[in-house]
Length: 331
Ligand code: PHE
Image (tube, rainbow, N blue to C red; front, top):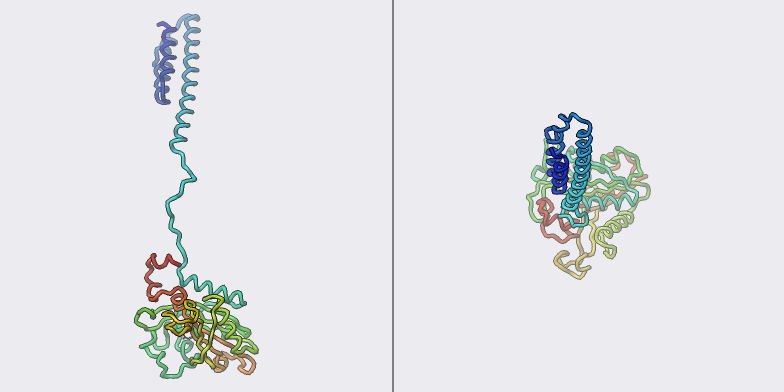
C-alpha cells in the first residue's frame, strides 16, 4: 500500500466534505476499524512502516477533527440564523378577558363606599319570608308577597326580591354605628323585556348612628350619583313610599346626556330616576333590638343594571345577559 497516496486521498476527501455527515463518512472510510490504514497497521511487521503509517493516521485524524469542528460551527451558525426568533415582531392578538360591565359597576360602587369608611358585607340570596317581608314591615296582602311576583322555594322561603333583608341581618349581628353596603343578585318573577330581567343586581346601603338625618342620606347619594354620572350632575330627591322607610324618597340625577335640556334618555324631563331610599323606619329598630330613641339611620337600594343602562345608553337590559362579545367588549 502506498501510504503517501492514501494520505493524499484522505486529505482530499476531508477537504471535499461539505457537511458533518460527509466528514463522518470520511472518518469511517479512512480511520474506521475496517479502513485500509487500520488493516495495514494491524499487519505491520517492521518499525519503519509502523511509524510512517501512524504518522499518516495522526495527520489524517487531525485534518478530520479540524474539518469536523469547522463544519459543526458553520452548521450551528446557519441554524441560529434560520431558526432565529425575532422578538421585535408584533405578536398575533391574544384576546384578553375583561370584567363584565355589572362587575365593573359593582366594584366602582364598592370603592366609593370603602372611601367613605363603609364596610362591604355579604348577604344571602335565599331568604325567609320573615326577613324578606315581615321584618321589613310589608303588610299582609302586599302584592310582593304573592307567588305571582316572588319566586318561592317553599311557603316560608323565597329568592330575595331585594337586598333590603340584609339591613335586618346586619343590624341583628352588630351594634351601631353601622355603615355598610351589600351588593348582589335579587329575583323577581318578571317576564324578560327591555327593562326587566327576573334576576338583577342591587346595591343596598345602610347607615345607623346617633343623629343621622335625611341631609346625611341626600349628601351621600349626591356623592354616589356624581361618582357614577359625572361631577357636574345635579341631584334631586322626591318623596316616595316603601314599607320600611319613613320618609321614603326616590333619587334623581340631572340627565348626563342632555344635561337637563331634554332628550330621549330622560324622556324629555331633564331628570333620570335612579332608585329608592329613605330613613330607616323605627319599627325595624324594634325588630332588631336597637333603641329607636337613640339611633336613626338611612338606607337605599338601587339596581346596578339600571345604572349601567342609563350610563352607557343601551336600550335593552337583556344585552347584559346575552354575553355577545360585540356588546361586552365596549366596556
Ligand atoms: N328595596 C327597595 C326596592 O327594591 C329599594 C330601597 C332600599 C328603598 C332601601 C329604600 C331603602 O325597590
